[in-house]
Amino acid sequence: MGSIRRRDVAIEAAAMVMLEEGKVLSKKEFDNISRPTGVRSGNLMNLFGSWSRLVGFIEKDHPDVWAQLQGEKAPEPEPVEEEDSSKPDPLAALANASEEKEEDE
Image 1 (spheres, rainbow, N blue to C red):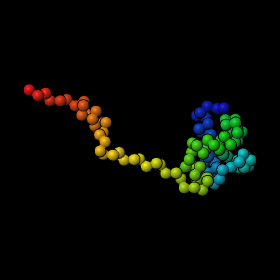
Image 2: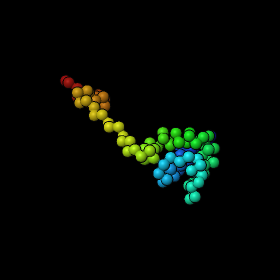
Image 3: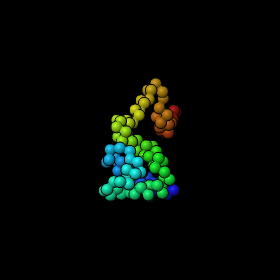
Image 4: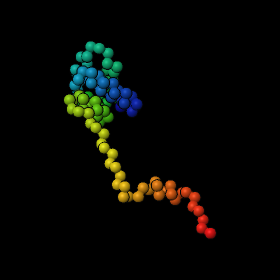
């Protein structure tokens, strides 16, 4: 297995090649691409051990590319829930506590 940095670069390169082809490629289909791909299938096999493991990493690390390869709409980020205004803001309470207080005489 290669270093994480090398694997990340290889995953991205393989994902972009598959995206250009418009589908998830098998190892044989990847080998039959005539144009330069930036990474060879042998290097990918050395880094990941199996083709299915590479595909799993593409699915996990690049969900937007995976959705396009599957013909699905890209996943939208989860909406941020607005905080209930009835709850006290802990940061505001901390800021108020750290302010200088006037002393009563």
